Amino acid sequence: MKKLSFQLLTVLFLLFSFAACSDDSVTGVDNGDTNGNGNGEEETITTIDDETTELSGEMRGTLRAGQTYTMVGDVIIPAGEEIVAEEGVTVIAAEDEFGFEFTVEGSFISLGTEENPNLFTVPEELRTRENLFAGLWGGFQAKEGAEAIVLKWTRLEYLGGEGAPGTDRAGSIRYGIWTLDDQTEVIMEDSWVYGSKDDFYRPVGGKINIVRNVFEYVGEDGGDIINIKGGTVGNIAYNIAIGGATNAFKPSDDGASTIQTNIAVYNNTILNSGFRRAGLNRGANINFENGARGKAFNNLLINNKRGLRILDDADLENIEYDYNWLYGSHQELVDEFLPQDSETEQRPNDVMGGVGENDPLFVDYEIDKFSMEDFELGENQPDDMNTVGDWDFRLQADSPALGAGTTEFSPIDVDFTLSGDRGPSILQPNADMGAYPADGSGLRLN
Image 1 (cartoon, rainbow, N blue to C red):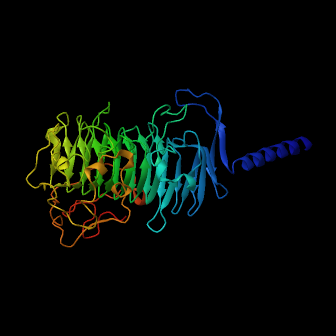
Image 2 (tube, rainbow, N blue to C red):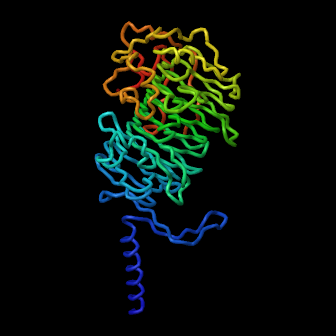
Image 3 (cartoon, rainbow, N blue to C red):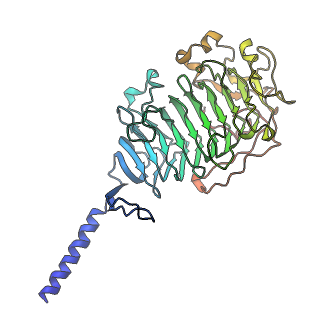
């Protein structure tokens, strides 16, 4: 009887000890993959709970509504796991030599709301004009096999910077978002980007839906807002891109994916882009190249270094474009409405004229405010050339751009698995040019 009681007490002690250890983390042995390639080392995934204030290491769980968290190290989301940010969350990346990053092997989901958006930023004293291109933290770096990155009503600031030793971008500048798998789903809606050292988003494959966002100050002296590579399909619509270094949106089919890049770019407003990248060997707003296919309609292209650029190595037979509106305050801009090194042709319903012709009549924007010298100042360009600020890019009631577009095309059909509050808003085209159709169906930020 005593022996039995001792055994019973031993079992109860072990069970109690296991339960006590399981409150904050899951501890086990890495037995490897199905081929037995594990290293046998103990690994720990921390589960975010009500007591969590600092983020670092392998983590999963929920960032609670209205709470502030500090990244004190790289945060790794393991395969099969996710971190979900509820509304009103603030994440501050603590100051670090390289800047911390989210390494995404599973999913990262940010579900801000219009009333309570989420913010991913740096300490307040570092949020300065001088740090716009400093690359103070590393954004979201996804691995092959990553499932999803969802950003809704989320503001991202001061992104980029060199990757730390041991990371995938060690010794190279990081992008604000980087994906490597043609099955990774990236949904970005009603969000705001302010300051990125290089490309904000470089998808090397993926299913994307980028709609109703504002992009400001992307790229120091190069880089695109979205620099698309092979295996990427989806839609980019109803965004404002202002002051991009090179291209706003560049679809390319570079890479080894068997899925052809296919992107529809429609109803965007793109202004003042392309001037921080020296020379004329790049685009400035929408740029199709290297085997990519897609569509470009209903875009307002205002005072960009060059017009819609379609290179001879793009999939010319499968790129549809027309009904784009171009405006130039200076002859140098008008001369590049049809870029000299491109196959772009003026389509029957495109709007492009001489200097100062075809003002789309924004509600509040000094369209001819900036001199060519202003455009050519590089990172010292005037702030209001690169930020929305107090400008209002809605169209006046008598704007000639209202109804000047077309609805006779469809968005790219993408097989998303995400749904519900995580899923994409597939927006249909609107005949009102640009990001703000008069019926209110487009961009909701200002």
